[in-house]
Structures are given as structure tokens and as C-alpha cells.
Length: 355
Image (cartoon, rainbow, N blue to C red; front, side, top):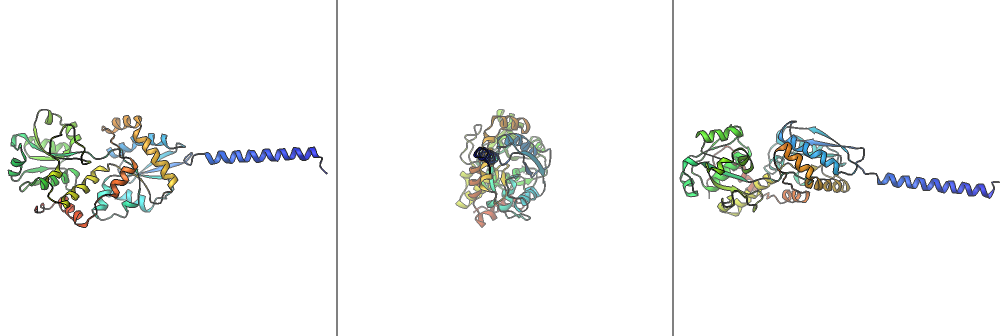
């Protein structure tokens, strides 16, 4: 038989080993889920473009704020105006917290407008936020036309409004302004690059254009400073956010004649508001969602990210937090008659008669 001393010693060893095992188990339990793992970022643009630069400004700072500092690998899925990447994220990605979509805001309008090839449901994605949230659009005409008031603008017939292509955001904005301002027989001329629209306007080949205020002020600040253009109406995105350079230019909604017209504008504002959204596949576990949403909030507020974004993209960060982005998507009006009206206004055909 073993002596009592041997038994006591063995007991102490067993107790020590059990404690060591419990300590090791606790240490393992406390290791961050993302430690040593790789997150795949599904990017809906091609490498090298502005959309790619937005993501490249984001990823190193986001990685810093995710506990465990996982690697982030980018997988490009350009195509279909964002449909290819959105369809993949919705239908093929594993909801394990290791796949994030960095998608174009165009996926929102594609689904709401019931465009072909959409195989995802916006309401089932889980939203992380966006680094930019829309921007104001404004319509203006050449000063030499003398259209210094809404009455004079409405009195001019056949104004030539330039844009990049049918369906481009500036093209749709121009048609919305023309419809709501009641322009007489406007002509929509597409096929330009953005700088070419400006040049054609200055040469007198075009009479007007609608543009993002930040783009216009960055490329052509003298148009405001030297009063080279007449500015007629602005679309606030979001509504109520006055532009400091155009505080007295009338907002497009003041020209709406019905609740349906206001809803049309509300839908289009959300299309512009969502910027470049980041999202997770449906059914991603809540604990992973909480980690990634918290990391995104910290990233969007991080001065390092703001500096890098400005350096690579050339614009300031205007963030939309996870809950704000989710709310904006959830509250988009879905009335069939509103969507059909917006489809008509966005297309290539004649503007519908104003009732």
C-alpha cells in the first residue's frame, strides 16, 4: 500500500494539474474569435477605381479595431452595377462573420426598382455602416442665358441638359429637377464624361446640368465665386441639411404637388444617402455582428481613417453608422405607384405630364 505521504503528494499534483488545465481552458476561452483568422472583403468594384480606394482606406483601420486583428483579404466582384457581388454575398457566403461586403450604393436602387438579375433581399442583409452618406445635388444654367429666376427658367423652351449616360445619377437628378421645376420641353443629352459636360456647358453646347455640389465646387469653384452660373434648385441629402454655400437656393421638395411626389424624392434621397454600404450576409451570428458593428463605429470615428480617406479618395468622411444605415434601408417607401413613377422619371423616354 502507498504511504499517506505518497497519497498526499499525488493529490497535490492532481490538484495542480487540474488547476493548470482550468487556467489554460480559461485562457483559450478568452482568446478573441478573430485572432489568427482572415476576413474576406467582397468588393463590388474593379481594382484601382475610386470605390477600390475607399475600401483600401478603410481596411487597415477596421482591422485595428477588430479584437484579434484578423487579416483582411479583398476579393473583387465587379459586374452588374453591384449585382454580382450582392448576389454572391446573399446566396453563397457563409454567415460565419468572416465575410464582409463592401458594396456599391447602386444595389439599393436595383432592388427597389425591381431591376433584372437581382437575387438578394435588402431587408435581410445586416448593415455595418458607410463612410460617406450622400451629398447635395444642384441644377444650374449658363449665366449668359439670363435665366436668373424660376419664372424665367420655366419660360425657356428646349433647354439642353447634359449628363454622362442614361441612368447615371447626374442624368436622373437632371430629369427630377426638370420635372419638379416644370421645365418646358427639356432635352436630355447624354454621352459625356464628367469633365466633358463642364466643357460643353462653357462652349454653349449645353444649357444646364445637375451635379453633386462637392464635385462642382472642387472642379469649378469660380462658377460660384465669379457668378458664372445661375443656380436654381438644390436637393438636400439628407433632407433638412442646408448646404453652407447655397443656403437660400430652394429645395426641390418645395416644388412637389402631392404626397406621392414627395415619396418619389424620399426614395431617391435614400438611394443617394447610403453611399458605399458595408454589410454582412443574412443570419450572421449576433455575437459576430456586435463585434463588427462596434469595430465599424470606431473606424468611422477614427482620425487615422479620416486622414487616409482624404488622402486616397480626395473627399471627407461623412459617415453613416450601422443603425442609421439600417433605418434608412428599412424606411424606404415601397409603394408600387411611387416606384413606377420613379422608374419613368429615371428612364430615357419623355417626362410624364405633370398632374
